[in-house]
Amino acid sequence: MIPLSWYIIFAAILFCVGLYGALARRNALAILMGIELMLNAANVNLVAFWRYGTLAIRGQVFALIVFAVAAAEAAVGLALIISIYRRRTTIAVEDIDMMKW
Amino acid sequence: MTSLQLVFLLIAAGTVFAALMVVLSKHLVHAALWLILVLAGIAVLFVLLNAGFLAVVQVAVYIDAIAILIIIVVMLTQRAMGPTKMHVNRNWGVALLTAIVLFAGLLALFNQMPALQSQAPPFALDAEILLDDLGLSLVDTDRYIIPFEVASVLLLAALIGSIMIAWPRGSASEEERET
Image 1 (cartoon, helix red, strand yellow):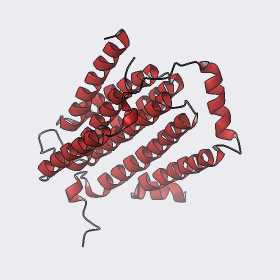
Image 2: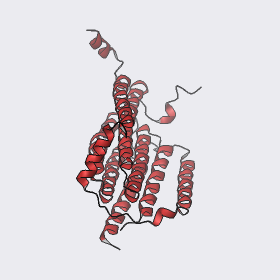
Image 3: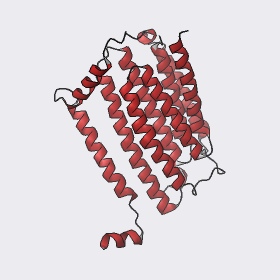
């Protein structure tokens, strides 16, 4: 059988890769992809703890709520990117500075 | 090493490689396609964890909806940032350091967890009963109906909000609304 630590270390690697993507990329879309990676890593952890715990159903419920939040986040984020692209014809995050004083 | 472990290692290695390609590839369409591979690998991991329903949801929500949406937006905004321009900002070194330090910290924390080497309890539940329980628990007033309703309100708000935000402000659409 697979030990629990394998799943957790895998999720940690995935989370850190996503964090690097979210922090380092210039393109707003790439940042969104990094955030998706991080959400997925959290979901892997939730399901792994569900499987290796007492098998109470709340682990899966929590993962489903994370799915809903991820879908909402992707929809709003992509709408924002499209709106910014229409107004400024750029999606590089350092050019989106209209709220910077 | 059992065959299950071999499957896990192969899938995990492929998924990590695909995730690295997501954050490193200069061409954004390639990054989006690598993202699909990551999501599929995680769906396989859900199957390995006896969570078949979540694997189906992963394919239906992430690969079907979110990844396709991302690819469409990548193609819509392709002109703004071609693959030739710099794809990382000037703070990428700090970002890399942050990620590595976070990973090291997580590993150090994991070493203190006693339950980490535990094996999975045998999966005695019937998958169908589990799925029934999952569905019922989401509409049971004593269990998880409030998170369920909050998620539905959130999805509705995101739906309306994204339509409002992405609505074209040009003259053509204004005329369309007035007529």
